[in-house]
Image 1 (cartoon, rainbow, N blue to C red):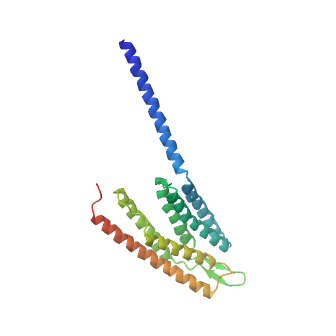
Image 2: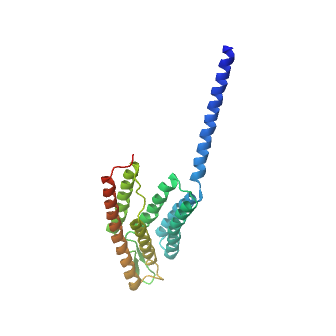
Image 3: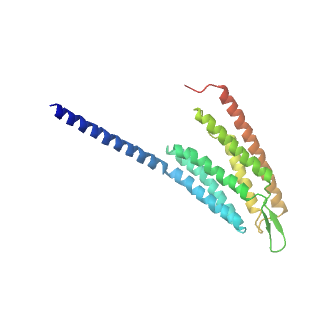
Length: 228
């Protein structure tokens, strides 16, 4: 009888082990399927488009194509967010990947356009309008806010993007698009360059303003104890 009970216990333990293994595999598969949903795939495609954009900028000659590609890539940011919220497909991976890719494409574009100058065949010259101090402000703000978000969300506080951050993103995209187009011999000129500079300066100003808004918001959060 004791031997029979031992065998039964061993069988039960084996079944529990196999059941746990199956549950673990199921959970992993579930996580994998969630990670490969439509919004996250769109986000990954935006990262691929960012790499293509940087190559085009470095090739010095496909400025209108680069501008169109940048606008298309930036537009997919709104698309993946809309799909994720509408169909309840928000994932932890998406919350991490989406802002990361946004920063790569915008900050990367500013870096690649830094003091970019093109000599035309007719002897003319075009300049991107992007100065080093502009790049420092844009990249510095993104690094600071990302660090602040990581610290606060680690404590259980919601530090998602605000309206000022979304407005900043839109104006930055307009500035990058204008900077790309101003390097094309078909578009470059005093009037367009003046408009480009206005948008660039506006983008830098809004970048600083949104950073201050986030600092104030974080300050108010830190004054309140997080929920238990």
